[in-house]
Length: 77
Image 1 (cartoon, rainbow, N blue to C red):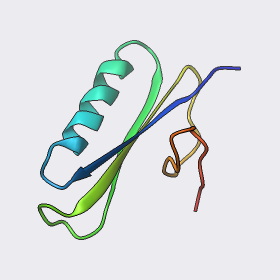
Image 2 (image 1 turned 60 degrees about the vertical axis):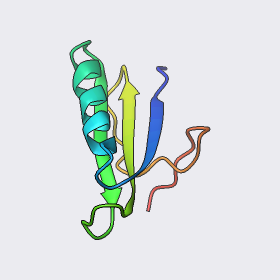
Image 3 (image 1 turned 180 degrees about the horizontal axis):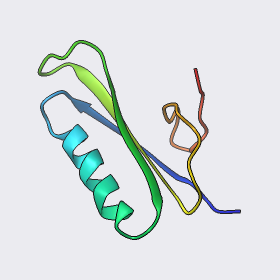
Image 4 (image 1 turned 45 degrees about the vertical axis):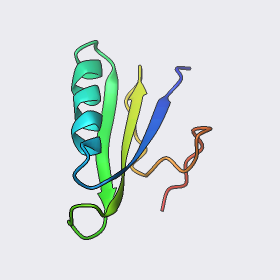
């Protein structure tokens, strides 16, 4: 069974977290691993709090929810 690495980025809108999360996904994707990258934000306003999530795995990723804590445990809504 393969390990899934889960990353949660915290930022303010406009500081580049979404770009960084997508860049990481694109780079890791070139290595043949499965990867997810998606943002979670409210109103699209510069300076508003936001999160970006990444998942990296050797197997297809079926989870479609955020990373809830730094231990990698997830809470799907």
